[in-house]
Amino acid sequence: MDKIENYTSVMARRGEIMRRSVGIDYESFTTGKLAFDYERMMKETGYTLDEVTKIQKESNVGDTPLIELKNLTALARKISEPGRGARIFVKDEANNPARSFKDRRASLSVHRALVGGYPGVAAATSGNYGAAVASQAARKNLPCIIVQEVFDSRGFEQPEIAEKGRACEAYGSEVLQLSVGPELFYVFLLVLEETGFFNASLYTPFSIAGIETLGVEIVEQTRELTGRSPYAIVSTHAGGGLTTGTARGVRKAGSPETLIIGVSVNLEGLHMASDRDFNRKSFTTGHTGFGIPFAVWPDRSDVPRNAARVLRYIDRYVTVNQGSVFYITEALAQLEGLERGPAGNTSLTAAFSLARDLGEEEVIVVNETEYTSAGKHPYEQITFARKMGIEIFRGEPSMERPGENIVIPMGPEQVTAGEVDLDGLRKSYIKNACKGLGEDWSITRVDLDFICDDTRLTEEKGLELLAAKGVNLSA
Amino acid sequence: MEAKRGDRVQIYRVILRVGERAPQVPEDTAAVPLEMTVRGDLLEDTAAAGDEVTVETPAGRRLRGRLIALDPPYNIGFGPPPPELRQVGKELRKILSSGARGHGQD
Image 1: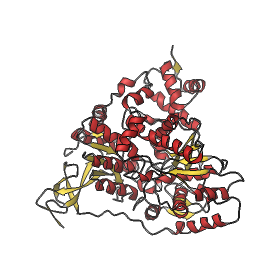
Image 2: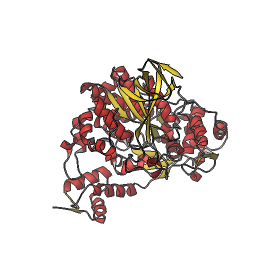
Image 3: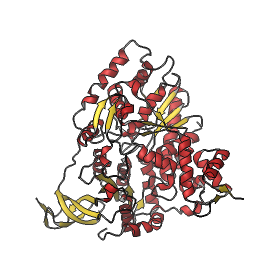
């Protein structure tokens, strides 16, 4: 990487670099102009549930406790209508080796790197996934490189990402720390090209297969502890992997009736590639800045076909504000004796609100927790936000303006989840899909079926939305 | 600051200068360079801050850049408990123990 190459020329080699570093011929799954055979891709390049379980057991990953949050449930009932307030459970994923659910993905990626005979493993991630890959690589004696977006042009490091960089180094990984910008991907391509390392992408079929065990464990443990299936599983949504993998596991466990509810922190108005906005947010993942773009066009990831496709699986998508997540994180520590990282509590925040509308007999499950540490903690995040000029106060959460203030609720009844219109997202998906059509704005039956599967639109509605864009079905 | 061979140091380099950045980046990002830092072991016998040096990273790669720190600490902490959160536990426990609707569990 001593000679720095032109951005465009490196990006032009993207397909070739990716093919070699992931070892999947994505082209072979193409079935139409837009369509590809998702299930065949998952089957042929992923692993069966039994294989995943075996790999994870050997890697000390998974089989984490499912914990009933009795005091938070009691609190929700105190502020609900009589007979309302579902039992809230959380899957304590902080019990994995690198202390988040990301170990499930990393264990599969690193296994794949070993099987494929790669000399090392690399990942472009500013999140827990970096620590997970570094941890798994460490125990397999594979060199590891993590590329992170960490600091703004003034040199201020986002505390949460700085902590993850520290964790990666603690596991013996090289950590390239970058300033703000999507060219992180360009640097990552150069690393892959130079080293020949395996690309531990978050979005490969095996990475997603690694999360299916989480869905299976949740259904089995919930049935064992409560005698019933979860009414809903609440899942933080960013790139879509956690939610997709969980939902696929839930289906494999035979609980199709369980609702899958995606949740993101609302960061409306903040530009994810902006140097100025970078340190004006307190959540570096699980937010709408990733959640919405990835929902409406999954194939924006670092692999040609993203195995994480949330519109296929989510029944509802809700948002919460930053201040409410900090509030619930504090509540979890104070009432349940569980000090966990704020980003992982995004889904818990929504679950607390959603539980109030459900009957007391129902069970709502939050599918993750993550570790907390210096930097990855509400105290540090709030202290840092104040330093960045963000106003912090207690009040009605709807007053929160991302990048300007963080509003901590006055009481638990103010913690609410705002509904995102899924049909609006489906429309955006269609708009994005049409961009891939080129000159000829007609599609075949196989494309139509793919679009309907990918968005859960009925054929009639799919055709209607496509027609509105000027796309017709050819014979 | 003088660093010796084998010392843990941090180096800095500009990856993309202003004008070389990706076409899609917003204006504020386009106006600043893409910068990178990395920590590794110094390979030169001695070096001072500002010198162009080579490090060996934990992954065994050799990378060049400007020396900016010798044995840099991790500058992350917890900060003080913010006043906006300090009362939350007490408030919630009060609601839980109140006689209002609902019931605590065992």
